[in-house]
Image (cartoon, rainbow, N blue to C red; front, side):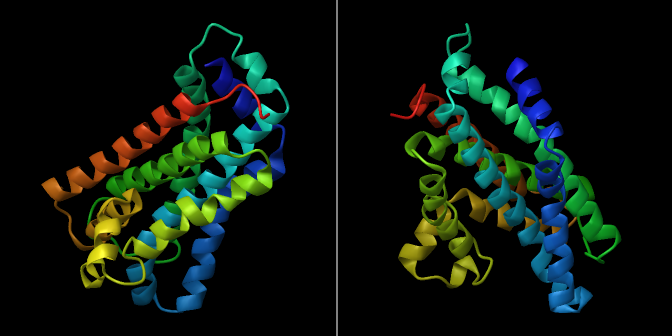
Length: 238
C-alpha cells in the first residue's frame, strides 16, 4: 500500500501528467467522433478504440515510470524493504489501476452520453472490459521496462508489444478474413479478445459464455504479465 500511495502522491503533485492521463482517451474519442461525422459510423468503430486507447497510454506510462524508478535508484531502495517483487509491482499496478478506472470511466461516459455511442449491452460490462484493457497495457508496460536501459529503449518496445496487437485484433480487418498464420497470431494476442468482447457488448445484451471467456483471457494475461514482470524485475539499470 505504501508504494501505491507514493505513486498516487507523485501523480497528484504533477497535475499536467495527471490531466493528460485522465483526459487523453476522452479527447481522442471526441476527435474520432468529428472525424467520422456520423453517429452510426462512430458507434461501429468507437467500442474497439475505447479499449485500445487506454491500453496504449497505460503501456507507455507504466514502462517509463518504472524505468525512471530504477535509473534513479528509488526501486533499489524499495527492494531493501521486506516486500517481495510481486508485492512491489502489485503496488504499482494498484496505483495505475486506480488511474485507469477513472480514465476509462470518463472516456466511456463522454462517448455514451455526449458523443452518441450506441450500446445494446449494459454499460458496466463495457467499463469492465475497458478497465481490463488498461490494466493489461499497464502490466505489459511494467514487464517490458525490465529489458530497457533508457526511456528511448522503452518506447522502442511499443512497436514490438503493442502495434502487432492493434493490427491483428480485428480493428481494421475481421479476424476471420485473415490468412492462416495471421489468424493464429491474432488468437494468441490478448487485445484480440478485448476487441471481440467490446464488439459483443455493442451488439448484444446477453452475457454469454464467449464473453466470459474473453474477460478471463484478458484478466489472465494481465496477471501473467505482472508475474513475469516480477520475475524479471532488477534492482537497477547496469
